[in-house]
Image (cartoon, rainbow, N blue to C red; front, side, top):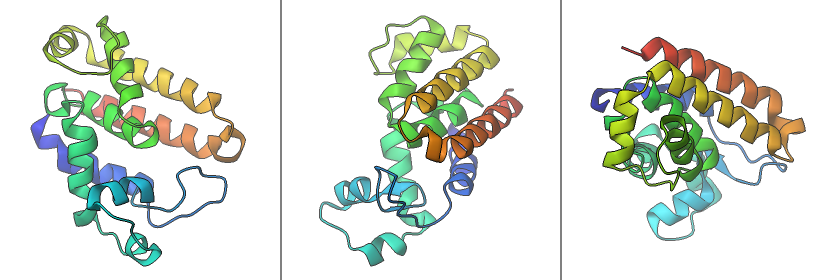
Length: 170
């Protein structure tokens, strides 16, 4: 839903926290959930470590809106589904969550959320869709070679996102 972006961003930034550069994380330098690669692409040049450390919510909000929220048409999927998808996008990129949504509603899983997908979303029980996204996301996490290192945190986050998303359903 259109009015949910700010609320979802706030919850997302709570999950993401501040600057990290864990040696086992393939994302490398990350702040507020935005990797150096994504930020460099956004600004059109190589950023410095200090620039990455200094990112603010105001710096990253437009990245989240364009790269995830708008790309998956989250204004149009319904309250709760928007949050489940946005948080999943940040951990895996937009294609995997888009395809999970499409499979949940019986659309062609091509990763492009369009009018046909949105129509099918509108016809499906939102709690089913949210639970399906949760299940696909957990399976994705468990398939990663870094699950032993990060799995407990990912699982906790996924469960929290599930609970939050279900509480948002109208």
